Image (cartoon, rainbow, N blue to C red; front, top):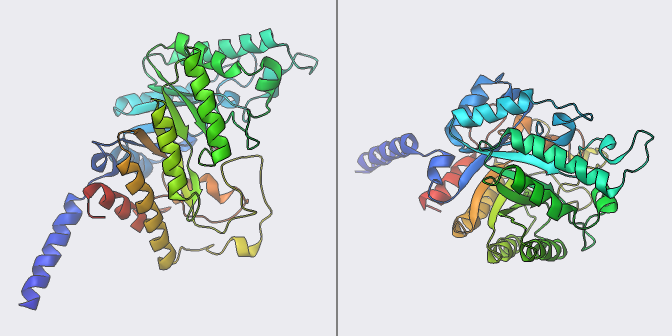
Length: 369
Ligand code: GLA
């Protein structure tokens, strides 16, 4: 009798595995599941990775190739080769294509803000540069890029707008202007505000206020992206939930845009993704240089299950969940917030094999969680 039951159980398991959905299938009724692509993947140099991307995801975001310094490194010099390949890849595979990012204080060359003598330009000049950039980049992919991160990280931890050269030179309305130019350049593309730490009440309140003001001024904002560079125990789920609800109430789409979950000890309680922060490597901050122990795999799977249960619960509000990288081998988290560690933040290991966290995420959608 026992052997008979065991045989049936084994058969069911095999059938279950064979029938096991991919991420995009499992969440097809809920939200898009996206992935950020790096340069090598866009160049088509990684065949196994390309196959996995096509199989599992229905949306893509470029990790770097559409950032200002890459696409527009000098005045009047645009490099569209990789960005074109990126968009072609998405089109060919019928994916929702995200453009990332138009206006940001990082990865934007100094010349944008300066005249030929290195002095800050005036408001009109910077607005003109912003407009030219947005018109050229968004205009090139009009009707093909589905949504743009128009402004990235404009809110500071001090509960106000972040002090950047955009803000200094143009003033508070630089955000509204960026959205207006993007809308003019492609009226049918979705336009987003994207940021980290929005789960922290101080940030959230400022960002909610920002979106409300834009809406009141007739500026169209279609969605807000919560970056999602998180860890095993931070942020707390209730704060993420409060954030999803706060933006959903404004009538904008909510997206988790750059999801990864570090399993490593935190360095100086750093949260978010301020790429100018970096801490010294100490041995105790890098406890798993060779492999992730089974009990940590389990913790990661549990954390991912909790996060996806929350996203699933709010699937009406959430339009997309995008992972910041395909597999552990290509994650930026090895070098942030501490350089030179070995982290395991994604659903696939560095050989592209699904980790227990992958199964946990699928299970949530299949309702077995
Ligand atoms: C921020 C940006 C991303 C990326 C990450 C680090 O979250 O939005 O484009 O640079 O930092 O990789």
